[in-house]
Length: 197
Ligand SMILES: [Zn+2]
Image (cartoon, rainbow, N blue to C red):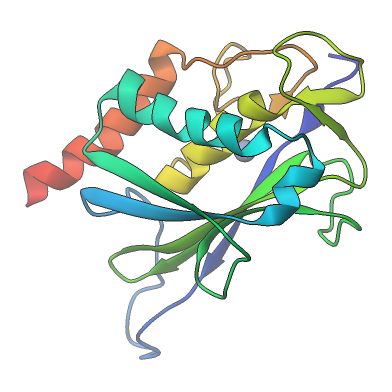
């Protein structure tokens, strides 16, 4: 545990209705409608590793293939615009926790997720795609992206199980697959909605 660090989810609430008689918004059970989520990969991720984008895409696809949820992803590589679902690398790191390896910034509207962005910390951490141990200060891009992609899909709560992808800390080891708990959590999130529909 010595070399682990926190991955945090930043959740921003954007409320369409400002009526003070409305109950406060909740993110419980919120997710994307079934279908395609368009992801923009900012060229800044290339500063992490030349193959970073390939491994980030693989992390997103792992959720679809392993958990079999009614979601697909499209990817485009270009500079992100406002409201894009953006994946980018940031240095200097401007978020409050300098130890965070990466964060996901989620924006909700009243009936679901509006946008989500993943930001990797390239000021304070080194990154790799080798799939092998590099150094105690180096993190596997795909392992971290798999965790953040879970937040993008709407999994806000962290797992208590250190073996789960949605555990709050990432070590220097490589784990590019979901645990059964991760699979069950995301399936519950998407199946509940389809029952309501
Ligand atoms: Zn997290």
